[in-house]
Image 1 (cartoon, rainbow, N blue to C red):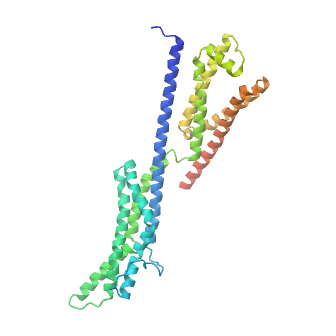
Image 2 (tube, one colour):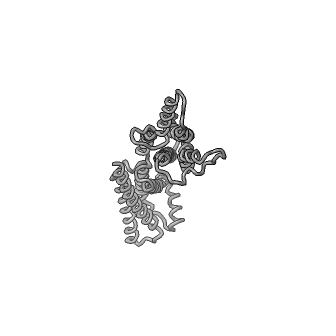
Image 3 (tube, rainbow, N blue to C red):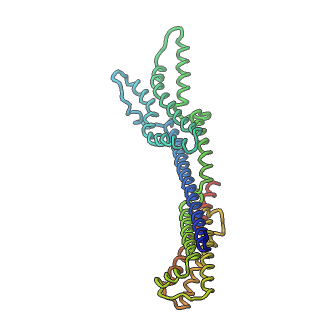
Amino acid sequence: MDISWLDAADSIAIIVASCVAIHGISSWRREMVGRRKYDLAEETLSLFYEAQDKVSSIRSPFQRSTEGRSRKRSDSETEEQSEMLDNAYVAIERYQRYEETFNKLYALRYRFMTVFGKSQRGPFDDVRHVISRITVAGRHLGRLWYEQTKVVSGPDAKKQQEAIWSRVEELEKVFWECSSPDPIAEQVEAAVGQIEVTCQRVMQSSPGREGGVAVRALKACLWVTGLLSLLCVAGMFLPLSTVEALAKAFADQPLPDAPIFAYGLRVSCVTYVAIGVFYIMLALDPMKYGAMVPFSGAAAVFVGVCCGAFGLLTEMPLAWFMGDFLGCTVLGVLILLFWRRAVSQARTAENAEA
Protein backbone atom coordinates (compact mmCIF):
# COMPACT_ATOMS: atom_id res chain seq x y z
CA MET A 1 0.00 0.00 0.00
CA ASP A 2 1.41 3.35 -1.03
CA ILE A 3 1.72 5.93 1.71
CA SER A 4 2.17 9.57 0.69
CA TRP A 5 4.92 11.61 2.22
CA LEU A 6 2.28 13.78 3.90
CA ASP A 7 0.72 10.79 5.64
CA ALA A 8 4.14 9.61 6.77
CA ALA A 9 5.00 13.09 8.04
CA ASP A 10 1.71 13.23 9.95
CA SER A 11 2.52 9.90 11.59
CA ILE A 12 6.01 11.07 12.53
CA ALA A 13 4.61 14.30 13.96
CA ILE A 14 2.12 12.37 16.10
CA ILE A 15 4.86 10.06 17.37
CA VAL A 16 7.17 12.98 18.20
CA ALA A 17 4.39 14.90 19.96
CA SER A 18 3.39 11.78 21.91
CA CYS A 19 6.98 11.15 23.02
CA VAL A 20 7.34 14.75 24.17
CA ALA A 21 4.04 14.55 26.07
CA ILE A 22 4.94 11.23 27.72
CA HIS A 23 8.35 12.55 28.72
CA GLY A 24 6.78 15.71 30.10
CA ILE A 25 4.19 13.78 32.13
CA SER A 26 6.88 11.44 33.48
CA SER A 27 9.03 14.39 34.48
CA TRP A 28 6.06 16.08 36.13
CA ARG A 29 5.25 12.88 38.03
CA ARG A 30 8.85 12.55 39.25
CA GLU A 31 8.80 16.16 40.37
CA MET A 32 5.54 15.69 42.26
CA VAL A 33 6.88 12.58 44.00
CA GLY A 34 10.03 14.50 44.91
CA ARG A 35 7.95 17.37 46.20
CA ARG A 36 5.87 15.08 48.41
CA LYS A 37 9.04 13.52 49.83
CA TYR A 38 10.44 16.98 50.49
CA ASP A 39 7.26 18.11 52.29
CA LEU A 40 7.17 14.94 54.41
CA ALA A 41 10.85 15.24 55.33
CA GLU A 42 10.48 18.92 56.20
CA GLU A 43 7.39 18.33 58.36
CA THR A 44 8.95 15.35 60.14
CA LEU A 45 12.25 17.09 60.88
CA SER A 46 10.42 20.17 62.12
CA LEU A 47 8.33 18.04 64.49
CA PHE A 48 11.44 16.26 65.80
CA TYR A 49 13.05 19.62 66.58
CA GLU A 50 9.86 20.72 68.30
CA ALA A 51 9.62 17.45 70.25
CA GLN A 52 13.23 17.86 71.39
CA ASP A 53 12.39 21.29 72.82
CA LYS A 54 9.22 19.93 74.46
CA VAL A 55 11.14 17.11 76.14
CA SER A 56 13.54 19.68 77.52
CA SER A 57 10.62 21.76 78.82
CA ILE A 58 8.94 18.71 80.37
CA ARG A 59 12.12 17.85 82.29
CA SER A 60 12.96 21.39 83.34
CA PRO A 61 13.73 21.52 87.08
CA PHE A 62 12.17 24.97 87.32
CA GLN A 63 8.49 24.76 88.08
CA ARG A 64 5.67 27.14 88.97
CA SER A 65 3.89 26.79 92.27
CA THR A 66 0.65 25.88 90.49
CA GLU A 67 2.15 23.02 88.47
CA GLY A 68 1.16 19.50 89.42
CA ARG A 69 -2.08 20.61 91.09
CA SER A 70 -4.24 19.07 88.37
CA ARG A 71 -3.56 15.60 89.82
CA LYS A 72 -6.58 13.98 91.38
CA ARG A 73 -5.84 13.60 95.06
CA SER A 74 -6.85 10.68 97.27
CA ASP A 75 -8.80 11.26 100.47
CA SER A 76 -6.26 9.22 102.41
CA GLU A 77 -3.28 11.39 101.44
CA THR A 78 -1.56 13.57 103.98
CA GLU A 79 -0.60 17.12 103.02
CA GLU A 80 3.05 16.07 102.84
CA GLN A 81 2.22 13.13 100.56
CA SER A 82 0.09 15.34 98.32
CA GLU A 83 2.89 17.86 97.90
CA MET A 84 5.40 15.19 96.89
CA LEU A 85 2.99 13.43 94.56
CA ASP A 86 2.06 16.79 92.98
CA ASN A 87 5.74 17.57 92.39
CA ALA A 88 6.18 14.18 90.74
CA TYR A 89 3.10 14.84 88.59
CA VAL A 90 4.65 18.00 87.06
CA ALA A 91 6.27 16.18 84.14
CA ILE A 92 3.06 14.27 83.36
CA GLU A 93 1.08 17.51 83.45
CA ARG A 94 3.56 19.19 81.10
CA TYR A 95 3.44 16.23 78.75
CA GLN A 96 -0.34 16.48 78.60
CA ARG A 97 0.09 20.16 77.66
CA TYR A 98 2.40 19.26 74.75
CA GLU A 99 0.70 15.98 73.84
CA GLU A 100 -0.54 17.30 70.47
CA THR A 101 3.03 17.74 69.22
CA PHE A 102 3.95 14.16 70.09
CA ASN A 103 0.73 12.78 68.62
CA LYS A 104 1.49 14.54 65.33
CA LEU A 105 4.99 13.06 65.37
CA TYR A 106 3.72 9.54 66.09
CA ALA A 107 1.06 9.90 63.36
CA LEU A 108 3.78 10.60 60.79
CA ARG A 109 5.67 7.42 61.68
CA TYR A 110 3.87 5.08 59.29
CA ARG A 111 3.89 7.56 56.39
CA PHE A 112 7.59 8.10 56.92
CA MET A 113 8.27 4.35 57.04
CA THR A 114 6.21 3.83 53.87
CA VAL A 115 8.19 6.41 51.92
CA PHE A 116 11.69 5.96 53.38
CA GLY A 117 11.66 2.35 54.64
CA LYS A 118 10.99 0.42 57.84
CA SER A 119 14.53 1.10 59.06
CA GLN A 120 13.47 4.70 59.75
CA ARG A 121 11.15 3.65 62.58
CA GLY A 122 13.89 3.82 65.23
CA PRO A 123 13.91 7.60 65.97
CA PHE A 124 10.12 7.66 66.41
CA ASP A 125 10.28 4.73 68.85
CA ASP A 126 13.15 6.40 70.71
CA VAL A 127 11.10 9.54 71.35
CA ARG A 128 8.11 7.47 72.47
CA HIS A 129 10.38 5.46 74.77
CA VAL A 130 11.81 8.65 76.30
CA ILE A 131 8.32 10.00 77.06
CA SER A 132 7.36 6.66 78.56
CA ARG A 133 10.43 6.66 80.81
CA ILE A 134 9.73 10.19 82.03
CA THR A 135 6.08 9.50 82.90
CA VAL A 136 6.93 6.19 84.60
CA ALA A 137 9.65 7.94 86.61
CA GLY A 138 7.10 10.55 87.69
CA ARG A 139 4.67 7.90 88.91
CA HIS A 140 7.36 6.24 91.05
CA LEU A 141 9.14 9.31 92.38
CA GLY A 142 6.21 10.67 94.38
CA ARG A 143 6.06 7.49 96.42
CA LEU A 144 9.84 7.20 96.76
CA TRP A 145 10.25 10.81 97.86
CA TYR A 146 7.75 10.12 100.60
CA GLU A 147 9.56 6.90 101.53
CA GLN A 148 12.75 8.92 102.00
CA THR A 149 11.11 10.94 104.77
CA LYS A 150 10.15 7.87 106.78
CA VAL A 151 12.33 6.66 109.60
CA VAL A 152 13.30 3.06 108.85
CA SER A 153 14.28 0.79 111.71
CA GLY A 154 15.58 -2.75 111.85
CA PRO A 155 18.76 -4.56 110.89
CA ASP A 156 18.36 -3.80 107.19
CA ALA A 157 17.35 -0.17 107.69
CA LYS A 158 20.52 1.32 106.26
CA LYS A 159 20.45 -1.03 103.30
CA GLN A 160 16.81 -0.21 102.56
CA GLN A 161 17.50 3.50 102.84
CA GLU A 162 20.44 3.26 100.47
CA ALA A 163 18.33 1.29 97.99
CA ILE A 164 15.65 3.99 98.08
CA TRP A 165 18.20 6.77 97.63
CA SER A 166 19.83 4.91 94.74
CA ARG A 167 16.48 4.35 93.04
CA VAL A 168 15.49 7.99 93.53
CA GLU A 169 18.78 9.19 92.07
CA GLU A 170 18.33 6.89 89.07
CA LEU A 171 14.77 8.09 88.40
CA GLU A 172 15.61 11.76 88.92
CA LYS A 173 18.19 11.54 86.13
CA VAL A 174 15.31 10.59 83.87
CA PHE A 175 12.74 12.92 85.39
CA TRP A 176 14.80 16.11 85.62
CA GLU A 177 17.08 17.70 83.07
CA CYS A 178 20.50 17.45 84.62
CA SER A 179 24.07 18.33 83.80
CA SER A 180 26.18 16.18 81.49
CA PRO A 181 26.05 13.28 81.06
CA ASP A 182 22.27 13.38 80.59
CA PRO A 183 21.14 9.99 79.20
CA ILE A 184 17.66 11.20 78.21
CA ALA A 185 18.93 14.30 76.39
CA GLU A 186 21.56 12.17 74.65
CA GLN A 187 18.94 9.65 73.53
CA VAL A 188 16.72 12.40 72.10
CA GLU A 189 19.70 14.06 70.44
CA ALA A 190 20.67 10.75 68.82
CA ALA A 191 17.13 10.25 67.50
CA VAL A 192 17.05 13.77 66.06
CA GLY A 193 20.48 13.28 64.52
CA GLN A 194 19.41 10.04 62.86
CA ILE A 195 16.27 11.58 61.38
CA GLU A 196 18.30 14.64 60.30
CA VAL A 197 20.51 12.48 58.10
CA THR A 198 17.54 11.09 56.18
CA CYS A 199 15.55 14.31 55.96
CA GLN A 200 18.45 16.57 55.02
CA ARG A 201 19.51 14.17 52.29
CA VAL A 202 16.01 14.22 50.81
CA MET A 203 15.62 17.98 51.16
CA GLN A 204 18.99 18.73 49.57
CA SER A 205 18.31 16.48 46.57
CA SER A 206 14.66 17.46 46.14
CA PRO A 207 13.52 19.74 43.32
CA GLY A 208 11.59 21.67 45.94
CA ARG A 209 14.77 22.82 47.66
CA GLU A 210 16.02 25.36 45.16
CA GLY A 211 13.81 28.37 44.95
CA GLY A 212 10.54 26.74 45.99
CA VAL A 213 7.56 28.59 44.53
CA ALA A 214 9.75 30.65 42.19
CA VAL A 215 11.13 27.50 40.54
CA ARG A 216 7.66 26.05 40.06
CA ALA A 217 6.43 29.33 38.53
CA LEU A 218 9.51 29.42 36.29
CA LYS A 219 8.85 25.86 35.14
CA ALA A 220 5.22 26.73 34.40
CA CYS A 221 6.26 29.66 32.18
CA LEU A 222 8.80 27.53 30.33
CA TRP A 223 6.24 24.76 29.83
CA VAL A 224 3.63 27.18 28.47
CA THR A 225 6.16 28.73 26.08
CA GLY A 226 7.32 25.33 24.90
CA LEU A 227 3.83 23.90 24.37
CA LEU A 228 2.65 27.00 22.51
CA SER A 229 5.66 26.71 20.21
CA LEU A 230 4.97 23.01 19.67
CA LEU A 231 1.53 23.85 18.29
CA CYS A 232 3.35 24.84 15.10
CA VAL A 233 3.86 21.15 14.40
CA ALA A 234 0.47 21.32 12.67
CA GLY A 235 1.77 23.95 10.24
CA MET A 236 4.56 21.61 9.14
CA PHE A 237 2.13 19.12 7.59
CA LEU A 238 -1.21 20.80 6.97
CA PRO A 239 -2.09 21.06 3.27
CA LEU A 240 -1.73 24.59 1.91
CA SER A 241 -5.41 24.58 1.03
CA THR A 242 -6.24 24.14 4.73
CA VAL A 243 -3.77 26.85 5.71
CA GLU A 244 -5.33 29.19 3.16
CA ALA A 245 -8.82 28.44 4.47
CA LEU A 246 -7.68 29.26 8.00
CA ALA A 247 -6.07 32.49 6.82
CA LYS A 248 -9.27 33.58 5.10
CA ALA A 249 -11.32 32.71 8.20
CA PHE A 250 -9.16 34.68 10.62
CA ALA A 251 -7.55 37.38 8.48
CA ASP A 252 -9.77 37.52 5.39
CA GLN A 253 -6.66 37.67 3.20
CA PRO A 254 -5.50 35.32 0.41
CA LEU A 255 -2.10 33.69 0.77
CA PRO A 256 0.64 34.14 -1.87
CA ASP A 257 0.60 31.36 -4.43
CA ALA A 258 4.37 31.00 -4.61
CA PRO A 259 6.67 28.07 -3.75
CA ILE A 260 8.89 30.33 -1.62
CA PHE A 261 5.93 31.09 0.66
CA ALA A 262 5.20 27.40 1.20
CA TYR A 263 8.88 26.79 1.90
CA GLY A 264 9.06 29.70 4.36
CA LEU A 265 5.92 28.54 6.16
CA ARG A 266 7.20 24.98 6.64
CA VAL A 267 10.67 26.11 7.75
CA SER A 268 9.21 28.64 10.20
CA CYS A 269 7.02 25.95 11.73
CA VAL A 270 9.97 23.56 12.02
CA THR A 271 11.97 26.31 13.73
CA TYR A 272 9.20 27.00 16.23
CA VAL A 273 8.86 23.30 17.00
CA ALA A 274 12.60 23.09 17.68
CA ILE A 275 12.33 26.14 19.93
CA GLY A 276 9.43 24.48 21.75
CA VAL A 277 11.52 21.38 22.43
CA PHE A 278 14.30 23.65 23.73
CA TYR A 279 11.93 25.37 26.19
CA ILE A 280 10.53 22.05 27.40
CA MET A 281 14.06 20.78 28.04
CA LEU A 282 14.68 23.86 30.16
CA ALA A 283 11.36 23.36 31.98
CA LEU A 284 12.35 19.86 33.14
CA ASP A 285 15.16 21.21 35.33
CA PRO A 286 15.75 24.96 34.89
CA MET A 287 18.31 25.25 37.70
CA LYS A 288 20.51 22.76 35.89
CA TYR A 289 20.90 24.85 32.72
CA GLY A 290 22.09 28.08 34.35
CA ALA A 291 22.47 31.01 31.95
CA MET A 292 20.43 29.28 29.24
CA VAL A 293 17.25 30.11 31.16
CA PRO A 294 17.62 33.92 31.28
CA PHE A 295 18.85 33.75 27.68
CA SER A 296 15.60 32.02 26.69
CA GLY A 297 13.60 34.71 28.51
CA ALA A 298 15.52 37.52 26.81
CA ALA A 299 15.10 35.77 23.44
CA ALA A 300 11.33 35.55 23.94
CA VAL A 301 11.18 39.27 24.77
CA PHE A 302 13.29 40.05 21.68
CA VAL A 303 11.00 38.00 19.43
CA GLY A 304 7.92 39.67 20.93
CA VAL A 305 9.33 43.17 20.42
CA CYS A 306 10.29 42.33 16.83
CA CYS A 307 6.78 40.98 16.14
CA GLY A 308 5.29 44.22 17.46
CA ALA A 309 7.72 46.45 15.59
CA PHE A 310 7.41 44.64 12.24
CA GLY A 311 3.64 44.48 12.60
CA LEU A 312 3.47 48.26 13.05
CA LEU A 313 5.99 48.99 10.27
CA THR A 314 4.08 46.89 7.76
CA GLU A 315 0.80 48.45 8.93
CA MET A 316 -0.78 45.11 9.71
CA PRO A 317 -4.04 45.05 11.71
CA LEU A 318 -3.31 44.79 15.43
CA ALA A 319 -5.25 41.55 15.73
CA TRP A 320 -2.80 39.84 13.36
CA PHE A 321 0.36 40.36 15.44
CA MET A 322 -0.75 41.48 18.91
CA GLY A 323 -1.02 37.88 20.15
CA ASP A 324 2.58 37.14 19.14
CA PHE A 325 3.79 40.43 20.60
CA LEU A 326 2.06 40.08 23.98
CA GLY A 327 2.57 36.31 24.32
CA CYS A 328 6.31 36.36 23.70
CA THR A 329 6.97 39.57 25.63
CA VAL A 330 4.96 38.69 28.73
CA LEU A 331 6.26 35.10 28.95
CA GLY A 332 9.82 36.31 28.40
CA VAL A 333 9.56 38.92 31.15
CA LEU A 334 8.03 36.36 33.55
CA ILE A 335 10.83 33.88 32.82
CA LEU A 336 13.44 36.55 33.63
CA LEU A 337 11.67 37.63 36.83
CA PHE A 338 11.10 34.11 38.17
CA TRP A 339 14.64 33.06 37.25
CA ARG A 340 16.07 35.98 39.22
CA ARG A 341 13.88 35.18 42.22
CA ALA A 342 14.69 31.45 42.08
CA VAL A 343 18.43 32.12 42.00
CA SER A 344 18.12 34.59 44.88
CA GLN A 345 16.18 32.12 47.01
CA ALA A 346 18.58 29.29 46.21
CA ARG A 347 21.55 31.44 47.28
CA THR A 348 19.77 32.47 50.46
CA ALA A 349 19.12 28.79 51.29
CA GLU A 350 22.75 27.89 50.63
CA ASN A 351 23.98 30.72 52.88
CA ALA A 352 21.61 29.62 55.63
CA GLU A 353 22.90 26.04 55.42
CA ALA A 354 26.50 27.27 55.49
